[in-house]
Length: 367
Image (tube, rainbow, N blue to C red; front, side, top):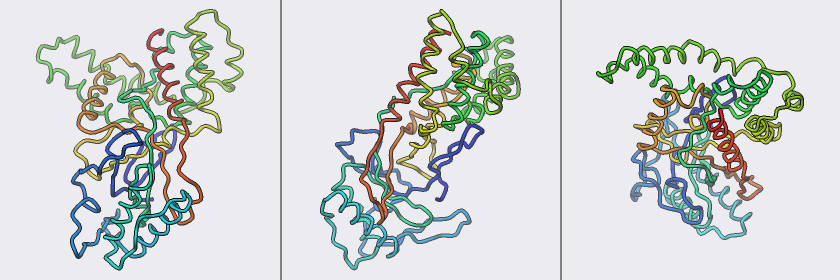
C-alpha cells in the first residue's frame, strides 16, 4: 500500500493504515444517518470537479516521481465488480448502467450510485495503483480529548505499586503503539519555545528563563527523556498479574488505581485490538497547511500533565485543531470482487476511551 499517512513508528509498536487516498466524502464525525456532500479542499478535483465531454485522465505520482494513470478501464472494471458483489450481499439493486463513456465518467457515476444506496460513508482509495471503494463509519469518540498518560505521579506510589503501575503503562503503550511525547513534533516546537522564552516575554525574570530552559533540557536529554525512553525497554516486573495479586493496601486512592489497572488488563490482552487499528484520515491531503491531530498525538505518554512543556504542547494541539481537524477512530471496509461480508463495526474505541477517561482523571485528581 502506498504510504501517505505516517503514524510515528516508535519503540512502543507498529504503524497502522499507511495509505494513500484520493476522494473524500464525509466532512467530519457526523451522525451516520445523514451523509453530507463531499468536502471541497481544493487538493484534487477528481470526481468533485466538473466532468467535461472528454474527461481527462487522473494521474498519481509515485515515490520515484513516476506517474500512473488511475482512470483506466481495468480500474473501473475492478470497482464495478466490487460494487456488484457488495450490492448483492446487501440485497439491493445497484442504480448504475455501464456505458461506453470514458472510464473516468463511469467511475464518477458508479461512485455516486454507491454513495446513494449505502448508509456508510464512502471514499475512493488508491492501493498499489488500484482503485478501491472504502466504506467507513466514525466511532463515538470524545471531541478534542487529550489522553496524555503521565508518569510523574508514580514517584508518589509505594515501591511495589509503582512497579505494577509502570509495567501496566509500559504494556499498554506497547500493545497500542502509543508514542511518548518526545517523539512528537509538538515536543520539538515546545522545546524550542522554552529555550527561547526570553524572546517571547520581555518581562520574564531570570529565574523564569532558567526554569523553562532547564525543563526543556530535561525533556531533550535529561531525567524526563531517560524515563520516557526507559518505558520502551525492559520490564518493571516479570509477572504483572501475580504482582497485582500480592499487593495489598487500605488506601482508597491506591485501591481505585489497582481496580482501574485490573479493568485495563482487557485492553492489553492478546485478543484486544490496537486503538491505532482504527486510524483513518477520511480527508487526507498530501501537503496540508496544517496537519490534522491524529490519534498518535491524542494518546501519548508524558512525564507530567501540568508542567510548562505540556502546556506548550497543548497550545500547539489546540491551534492545529482550530485550523484543521482531529482524527477520530473509524472502522473501514475495502471492497473487492471477493468481499464476502457486509460492513460491521465493534465498540472497542468507545470502551477504550471511557476507561482512559476514568484512568487519567483518577490520576489527575488523586496523585
